[in-house]
Length: 112
Length: 113
Image (tube, rainbow over all chains, first blue to last red; front, side):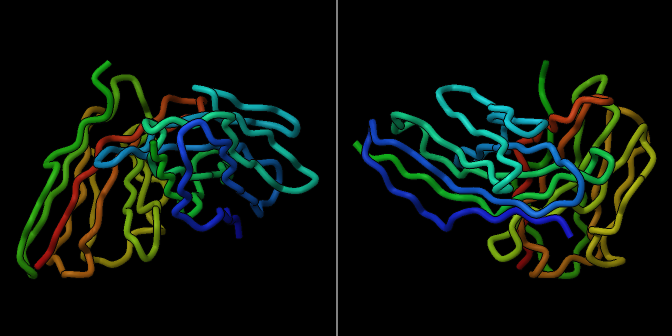
């Protein structure tokens, strides 16, 4: 079945460091790919998405490129801030476009 | 827009009691999803509705769980009787038509003692 694998957390970085959170997937067909962010005590918010191979999603300085050949959708940010501390979820959408499959989440902690 | 609204935000109950979680989707959204989040199992889709009709309830863990959507602006998830292993954060999300973004509510943290 469909699945998403994310790197284990927590990831701890200093402010202004470069961030990469790895995400790989297994799916039939051509899924859409997403990154969601969950701040403490809140629900998930869509951060960015890509719907086809080689698409790059971007938002708030975060980027991820849909790589079909490596079945990956790694999240990157050039300079993280303390306010980026949250849990990040990679997800894919299949099943006629109705069922999101989530990874386990990666906690990011950014320190001064 | 007000976003997806869930109530209560926190619920503490004793084993064996009935629990009802509530959700109001974003106005105009015709899909509604219920998820459960635990440390052990992560985020799991329990059930989803389209135009108030349940489409896929294969994620509902047991007969103790039931969900309804009597109209386009309200849904409930009921657990009867509740058990300690039901302790989790329950999220509701909604989506508009052919768009693929789901919008999540703030969640209900359920603790069953």
